[in-house]
Image (cartoon, rainbow, N blue to C red; front, side, top):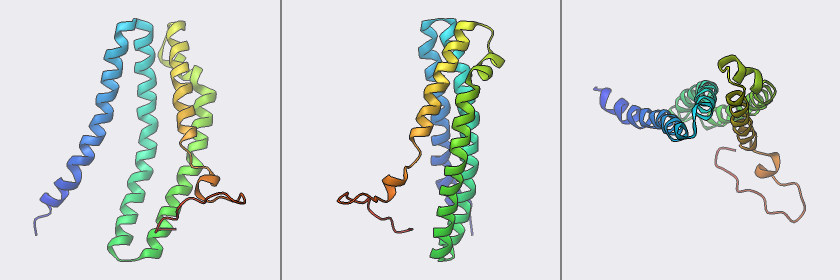
Length: 160
């Protein structure tokens, strides 16, 4: 059996999605370059930090995807639910650590790569926005299950 065609059907969209993130970073740098050397240096450093941290998320995502595919392929719904729960727990445990460390260390990280005080300040500001956005992407307990009287609960997904 030829496995190349199905693998390419899976790989090409994933590769395009990853490439789109890289292209977005290039466009950011090109767009901000018009503002001067300090802003472009700040965006370049902050984008690099963001991409490095995104690698952590992609590692978890890759592992969860493989385990989930194996469980679903075997028709094991309880195992699939367990994998999804474990993935959410990993995300819920790692995200606050990354966000907290990122917010606390944004100035030293920027200073490790940049010499210009203006660029360091701008990079630290970019990272502050980035890490606050990551924090706000965390699902709150109330968004999945409501404990308030009269509140409309979130719809339940099939895997819960």
